[in-house]
Amino acid sequence: MDYISNLRKHIGTQPIIMCGACVIIINEKNEVLLHHRRDRDWWGLPGGAMELKESLEDTARREVYEEVNLVCGELGLLNVFSGPELYHQYPDGNEVYNVTVAYTCTDYSGELVVEQIEGRDAKFFSIESLPTNLSDPIRPILKTYIEKQ
Image 1: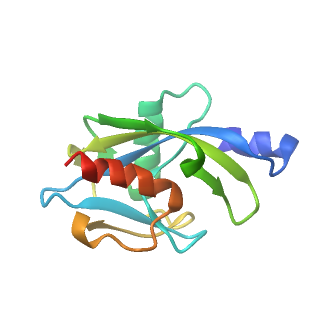
Image 2 (image 1 turned 60 degrees about the vertical axis):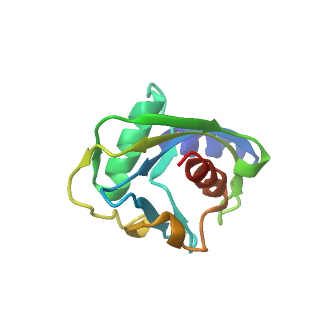
Image 3 (image 1 turned 180 degrees about the vertical axis):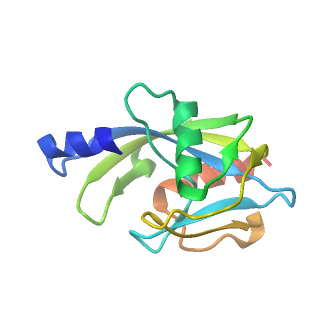
């Protein structure tokens, strides 16, 4: 997150618009992969902020690989999410209004390994048994995914 970190040096914790991507990875049992974050006791989707010179698909692929060690093949566009529902204040006080492009992926490879700086765990959940402690900005994304099923 070099771009955002550099920006924060100049503006502090003020609200910013942060563009990023996330991926709903679906296994053969039709379960979705969630990533348990360290900064809060929240489950979310693998994903993160876009870096300079990166496409949103590149962001999605990079973040999935960095966070859970999986390589995404074909990505399907779910939707673009923005607005008050995607507002987030991090524990350090940084405020963001996310613009998130959400992708779906059933074509992935690699061994699931959680990067330990940002993540505690990652595992697949059935839609019927999602954890209650979902990240607030992820809720509308998962809701849209479920509605389209």
